[in-house]
Amino acid sequence: MTSAPIEAVVVGASAGALEALSVLLPALPTDYPLPVLVVVHLPPDKKSVMAELLQQKCRVGVREAEDKEPIRAGIVYFAPPDYHLLVEPDRRLSLSSEEPVLYSRPSIDVLFETAADAYGPGLIGVVLTGANSDGSRGLRAVLSAGGTGLVQWPDLAYASAMPQAALDACPGARVLSLPEIATYLLECVTPV
Image (cartoon, rainbow, N blue to C red; front, top):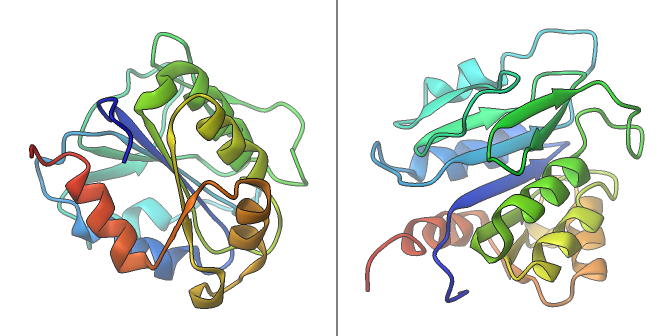
C-alpha cells in the first residue's frame, strides 16, 4: 500500500463489468471517504442504466458524471455513454467528445491519465474484466505518478484480455480477486 493518503479511486471495466462492479461497489459503506470514478465501455447510442442498477445495490451514491461538477467523496461517478470522463487539475469532472481511444469513448486510459495528473500518489487505479487493452496505458500513468495499481486476476475475470494487458504493461500492479480488491479499497482508508 502506498504511504501517501489515498484521495480517489478510478475503475475501468468492459465485458462483464456489471457483475464485477456488483461485487466491488456494494462493499463500500455509506460514509466511504473517497470518490470513485468509473469508466465502463457502453454502446454510444443508448442510455445507460448502469448507475441506476448499481444504486439499487449500493450504500454510497451512484450516478452519471456531469460536466464541470466538483468531485465529492462517497460518490461513485460513471462516465456517460459516448463521452470521455476526465479529471481536471482543480479536481472537477469534465466530459469530452474527443475522438475515441482504442475504439472506446469513454476511454479508461483517458480517465486514468487525467486522474493520475490530478491526484499523483493519492490515486488507486483498478482494471477489471474486459476484452481489449484499454486501461493499460492509464494504469501505467497511475503507477508512474506514484499511485497504486490493482488488477483483477485475469483467470477469474469474465473477459481476461483487459486485465492481462494491464499486467503485461504494469508488472508492478497487484493482482487480486474481486473480494480482495473490495477489501483493499476498505482497508486503504481505515486508520491503523
